[in-house]
Every structure is written in C-alpha cells, then in structure tokens.
Length: 208
Image (cartoon, rainbow, N blue to C red; front, side, top):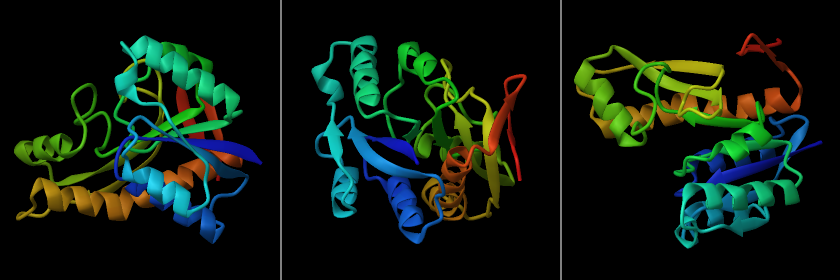
C-alpha cells in the first residue's frame, strides 16, 4: 500500500475529490497518509481532519526563500515515507531539490489542456480568463508529473469540456473542476498506485 502525501494551500476541493474517491474504494493500492499545507488557515486542513487524515503545516511565510522552504518540504516528505506526492491547489513552486528527489513521483492537475495556457503565472482564474480571451471552443484539465519547469512534466491524463458562448472564467472553472479535475486526479492517483503508468522517452503511458 503506497503512502500518498497531498500538498495544499487553499480550500481543498481537489483534496476532497481524492478523499471521496478513497472512501468509495476507487483508489487502489494506496491511501492518503498525510496532508501538508503551506498555510495554517487553509480550509483543506479541515477537510483532512474531518476524514481522519493527519496534517502538517509548513508555513511558506516562515521561510526566507523557495530553496529553504523546499528543503523543509523534502525533509517532511521523507519523514512521511512518501511514495506519491499530489499537488492539490498547492500554490508554491517547488525547488528542484524536491522534484529530483521525487522524480516521476509528484503529480499535479492543471486547469487547461497543456501545452495551452500553462507555465509560470498561469493559475486559478487567470487560466480561464486567457482561454476565454483567446476564444477557444474546448478547454479542460491535465494531470501531469511535476519536474523542474512549471507545467512541463509528462502528461498522464487529459479531459475536455465545451466552452459555452456565455461562459465567464468562474463558470468555466467550475465546469472543468466538476467534470474533469475531480474525476481525473483520483484516477491518475490510482493508476500510479497500481503501477499502471510507465515512462518511455520522457512520456507517460497508461497501461489499461
């Protein structure tokens, strides 16, 4: 049984999707053993406590730079014996000391179809604002491995929704979360824990 560590910063809707999937028995071969938050007041911590999942707060404000904060995260991941690290609304870019130590063991969900609308500065509603400005007809979300570059790791799963004529960034965000993010993230976690993701030439392949 693999140890899944979830990193959070905010409300924790994607964490809740993972918790719900775990409680339904949809996540095979692993369990969430700890939730680590970069903010002491993140509501995601309440979600974890309600589900009986241990929590740790490593406040970003208490560290002078990204490197020292990432080193603290790395130390905690090692202490928790992490097999898989899931970024669920974690708003801090991790230094390569973490991404190299956990190469192809960190996954993130991005609210767009990578390589569109991704990279540094593309997060939250900003992603959907740009998608609507561009006039795309479909958008969606991507679950990918995390490496040293923002949103540049190997793609595991993608899913799409139609963009409607009267969409706002908020309505598009909600549709993508409900129809793609909350479904694909737990599925990707289960695939990893079942050892059904292989890497070839830097690309991720799902074994059905």
